[in-house]
Length: 95
Image 1 (cartoon, one colour):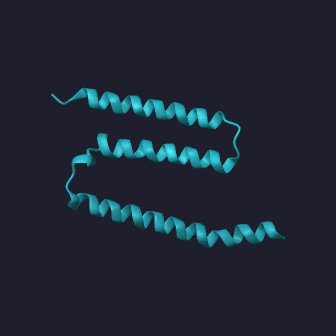
Image 2: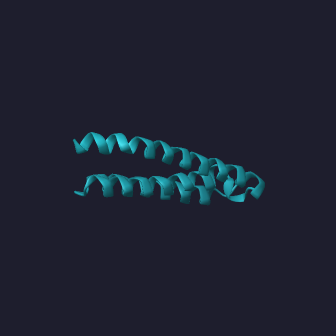
Image 3: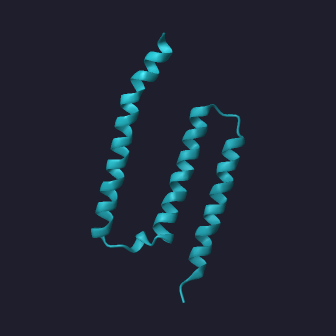
C-alpha cells in the first residue's frame, strides 16, 4: 500500500494554490503583475503535479535530461515566436 498521506498533502497544496490563484485574480493590480503572479502559481502547481503525481521526483537522470531538453527547446521556440511578433505589436502601436 502506498503512502496516501503524501498524496493528500500535495492535493491540499494544489487546492491552496488554486485559492491563491483566485485571490490574485480579485486583487486590483495592473495586468502585467496579475499575469506574472498567476503564471508563477501555475508553474508551482505544474511542478508539484509533475514531481509527485507523475513520479518524476524519483526518476533516473537518464529520463530527466530529455525532459529538460524538451522544456528548454519549448521555451526557446516560444521566445523566438514572441520576439518575431514583438515588432508587429510595437510598430502597430507606434503609428
